Image 1 (tube, one colour):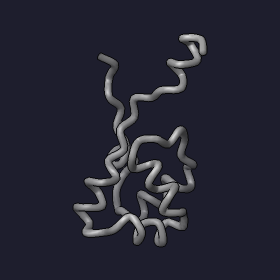
Image 2: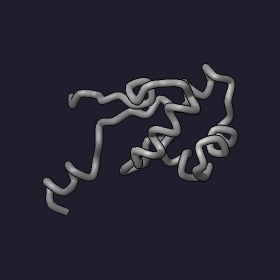
Image 3: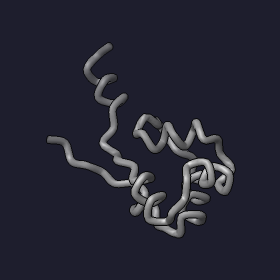
Image 4: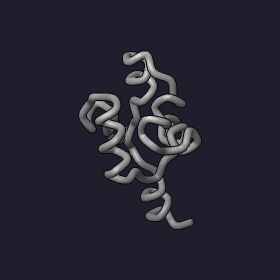
Length: 79
């Protein structure tokens, strides 16, 4: 795989779903039910393996968790 393609396949976004769930006393299963997505898809997001997220899903996550997108996601600078 060319270096350019490899660079685009990785990302520097950190997902803070674990912290938000803990702060709200909520399980991943409960969040999945309330947001309307599968536990498997939320698990992929939580573990940083997601390649994309729909704005509709991000909106529902923010509504259910009562947070802003910046509370859920952050960008880490390259080293």
